[in-house]
Length: 214
Ligand code: AMP
Image: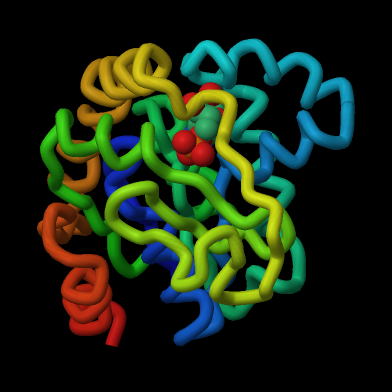
């Protein structure tokens, strides 16, 4: 099964994509994570994208479309994938539609997380993750069970994303409303869209997704 998760930064797409991957085996394709890996590796693409990401702006469509076009052809995507953070503009949604048609790939559901902007700022500014395993935490809502130790792998180093500060988050949210929200109508017109309440508890959102993904 192939699905697309849509929603502003902080809405829970990444967390739920990881859970779907663990339960159903589809591969999470997070364009944000792919780009951060490029930045980390110091590749030409990473160097080009670094400043854009840190300013909370969107990377040019052609770069990101190319990245996804290559990635979905890899063998691990053949059993299904979850697009997390892509598409983010109407041209990206159109390019994806063409790409999928050419390769006879069907997306079964486009799931939109509906949330409140101010709550997203609070969620993002407080979040951090284990450097070793990537397990996500939040200063207020989800601290490690033992202070300073990752629940999942016992790691003791934690990191914050460079773009998770209030100013950048506000810019990312503004971009979401201007550039990404229009693709909700794009998928609604194609009768592919399902909405979930992204303000609900994490486990409740997971339960709701289970009813959709089955
Ligand atoms: P995310 O991890 O999804 O919040 O993405 C982090 C950053 O990566 C974004 O703020 C953008 O700078 C860049 N990015 C990720 N996905 C896309 C995309 N589909 N189109 C353009 N830029 C993207």
